[in-house]
Image (cartoon, rainbow, N blue to C red; front, side, top):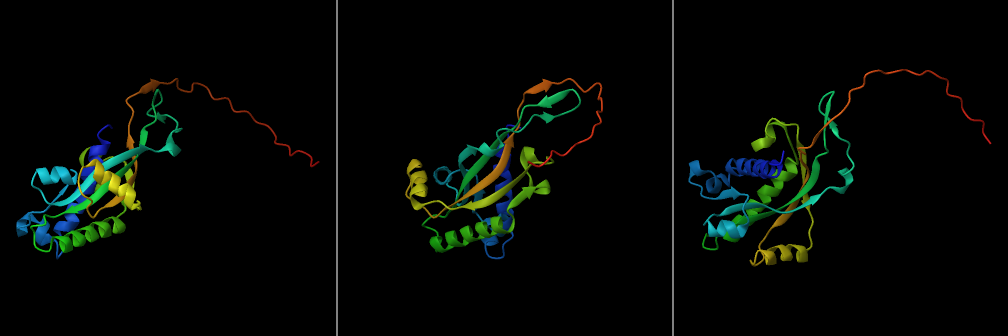
Length: 206
């Protein structure tokens, strides 16, 4: 399905939101029932600032086609149809805690929040089954989340592209997310199978 990208982001955000809202310390900031005003958003930090939002940005800033899975065969749907191989992608997310400097102890809170997010993905790196949200719900899709080590220069380029000063952030790679093809081919089912028997003879050593 073409909505796999959106559904993956929604899945990650929902899981992080639940962990923050139920944390004994951070729930006071993220759980609206406790008066919390911080949110988990898939917007980038600049968009959050423009919307006057604070919390955590889970922003998909890059995606790449997975070269190791480009030669997958067609998927057999039934005896007469097969589907063109899916497009396999690796998604890259920038995770940024975003708290206004006007908030008391904003730097300390940002570090606490980022630590909790990193603990969340460390403890739960695989998403499948009941974890999946949006259009992925009920599907057999499965993906892994892994911390990605980026050089400071690479992170700086991302922030330069946002035209924002560098902020505390980390990158995660999500793999593999498939976008299914709409191309379905008709195939001819096997009509007759003729078994052939024989004897395998080992060749003489030279």
